[in-house]
Amino acid sequence: MNTPREKEAVNAYLKLLQSKGASTALLHRRSLFLDKIAAVLEELMLDGNEYRVAVENIMESVPPEDWHDNLTTAREFYPFWIKDIKAIAALSRSSGFEINPVDWKPDIASLKSLIDSLETEKFDTSENWPLKAYTQALRFEGADQALVDTRVKLAKIILIRLRSAPEKNSSAYRTAVDLTLPLFTIKQNRRLFLVVVREFFHFWSGNPDAASMVLKDGSGNILL
Image (cartoon, rainbow, N blue to C red):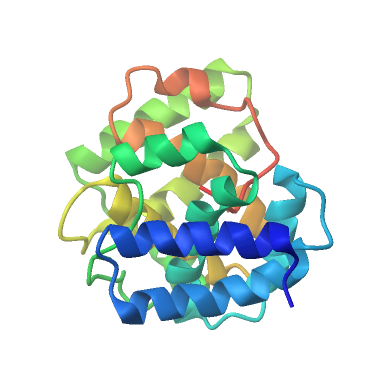
């Protein structure tokens, strides 16, 4: 039985999704995941880091194909749990809730096959531009060559996973990332990948302030 705090947050979240036209099937899937996470959250303080760790631990038992839907739920539910009314309103105004998921997934691959492909993979101009800008920003911040090489390799994996996406937008980026995360079986490597995911997005999306987003937070965050 969930505490009143978690029950209230879950009900508010599902009610808002329903009001936006979410299907019964989607609401059911989200509620099943929320049952899992609410049981853990009721023991925690209202803290973002504790929430992240709780989600990370739960995701270890989630099938890889369900990572995107469940991480989407975790991202959307967080402001309801901490009762951040402003964040909820901002998400609602900007269509920040994924009510009609894009029917696309990156091509099936293993982490080894992706890493091996980097030896011969060719990147076109639209891919090379953000890679070069990201590399330059890392160097400007004083990163050593080993760190630059590692982060750029991870950024290249993101680009490979995005190649079959029907559109270039943040939804496709999140989907590609969420379905790549379970390929990293070592938690520390997964967290490093998430650092690159956050940093590289600004270059990939053409944010003019992208360089200022580099090497400022190395903590990793499963809630993109």
